Image (cartoon, rainbow, N blue to C red; front, side, top):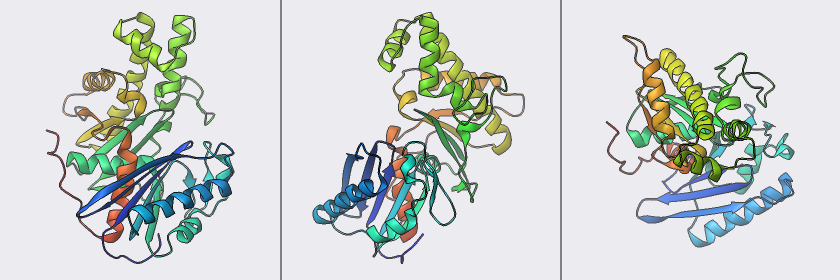
Length: 311
């Protein structure tokens, strides 16, 4: 974190492996939204040059900002240096804090895990202080919010690496049975392809579900059961008010989140039901809005009015 707290012109940046989204907000001014793709080279110097061009575009078209929140899928150390990022491995060793300070010398800046920030944004949108969030996409991201703040404080909540089947598939972390190895989009598509006996893309899976094809139903059922197991386990430990399931893969399959909710409900026990499961209200923009929330927290300005909390 760096820079002074000032007024209330905030910028959120959601950094992905292939593209980046920006959203700037200020009271009484239309929001600024912009998405761009990283260069194919995956060179950090080239990436930062493109980001600098986009920041200049923002300043020219919308104005300066007082605080910047950045949602990152990478792991950083306490000093803000990138330690791991499979999506863009060239960033390993990059002083991200220093790079942001150079890009925004007059603004407060902070970086946080994208799953944690997605959880924060969804919790605030739902009007709930205690929430677990699971983002289902290329991997499984997630976060935990308790008493209105992301936890744990020293690192991100690696919900995708919660073990739900000790003898399960090998995860890309080289362990067996992680939630990500079973319930992520690629894992679900691989199972569907194996059952169908041919390649299955996302559109094929969706069409198969619409036709209630056994290979599609079985592949999705296994993913939803694994997610439900994670929800139930997190419920036993944390007792959240809500479990929210988001991510592009989950959002794109009708009936996916309700199936997770039903399987979790069945797995509850007397006196300790599973937390209710809801779809993400912000869809694929959860992390971006979380980055805006992070920036807003730096300035101490209140958030705008939120939708009615989920009952």
